[in-house]
Length: 354
Ligand code: ATP
Ligand code: MG
Ligand code: MG
Image 1 (cartoon, rainbow, N blue to C red):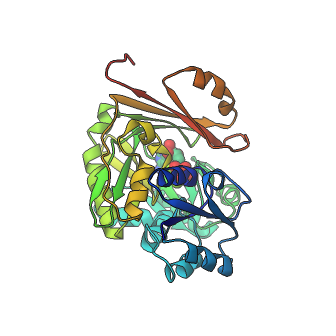
Image 2: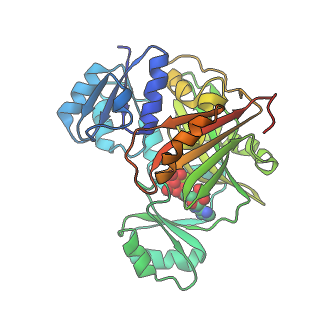
Image 3: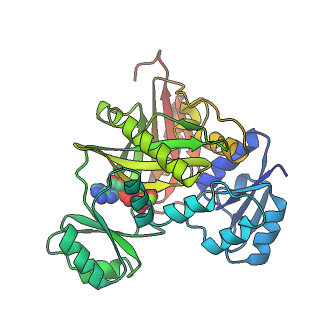
């Protein structure tokens, strides 16, 4: 059928559903929450858990292809869906990107650089790993972390028992702290035939572990490291036989690009592409999962800047719409501190002065 199934009901699902609608597709959102940013813009939706076998089967029967907006879909749900309907990106992309040490290991195998890291499953292993990696370092849960949640920073003399309790004793990765000059991401879309398209690599600034701004073109120190990072992203996408958007986050360091993490999906650092590129990350993802050719990723202006509206910052929406050049996106969520409520993009055309 011409209905695209989307697992997950957040803002990424919402923007995917909007892009799909523009191309003439219907979307069907599957999410455990009663309603959310994605269900509000989608004609069909199922509210059910990822362990509800009957609901998953009915969902699979109503859609022609399944994609997802987050990487923590339980493997059992994927196994069940996979038997009934194509899932794009495929299971391998999720298996790897769901677990931090797996994605780091794959990147290393393909010749990329990462911070020194050790997977830890017990407090004793954390002590050994800290002995080896030293301070400063960061303890991150292997799965389910986002916006810097599920992370503890360790210094010399840090209480490891307390750090271990803080992350709930979950399987984790201890990684060395990277001295970086900038952060950037590679946004890559791989089509059903293996062709790839990349956008300008945004220069990303994080505040308190949450993305604050993404800007293209990036500063020259990032531009100098982008080709190596893009080549690595292509290798990763090919190795996974990935179809759709793949995002890799990097630190730009004195020794070149250091891989941080990946996401097998559209990404916050790519939101600027809605107005700032001929084809957005959302549209190209939909094109890829539907087997259509990819659209141009060329920039529409000399510069584009995306700023996240976190928590209370979304209350300034009135001032933002007073600026005729600002493009406001609100996700329709209830304000909570630290929550991504929306974003605003500004594209600077050649004639304007920034
Ligand atoms: P998200 O998925 O929302 O991007 P996350 O919770 O998976 O975030 P990371 O991307 O691992 O978290 O870390 C968030 C931010 O913390 C990074 O963008 C970076 O600014 C900082 N950070 C993470 N790991 C390191 C590191 N090893 N060295 C230095 N800074 C780091
Ligand atoms: Mg992450
Ligand atoms: Mg990150």
